[in-house]
Length: 102
Image (cartoon, rainbow, N blue to C red; front, side, top):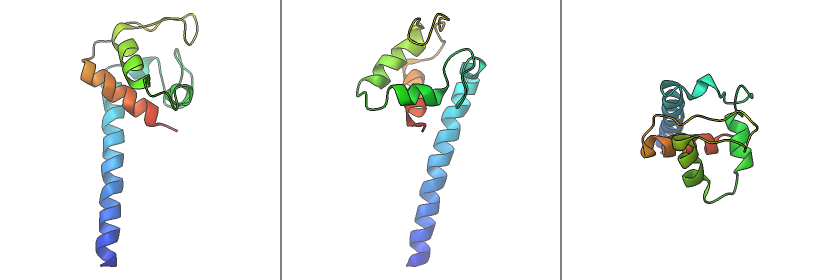
């Protein structure tokens, strides 16, 4: 029985890891990583900074997904974020991943 529990925990961990990697892969595929990194400011804020700023904001996914799609300016400084060629679903997937970072 203990072996089954360990196997289930390992499988759950692998599922989370592959999901996280898949979302990071989407960020790379959509060129988001040209201006952002996970943990350091580049042109735009790090994804961890974004996650910290919007922690606890129930409307953050929709609000930020709209910004990813349309672009924005002013929240993080003077350099604007251009509109991105993503579907609404991809934008939500990216934002959900970003907000999950700690």
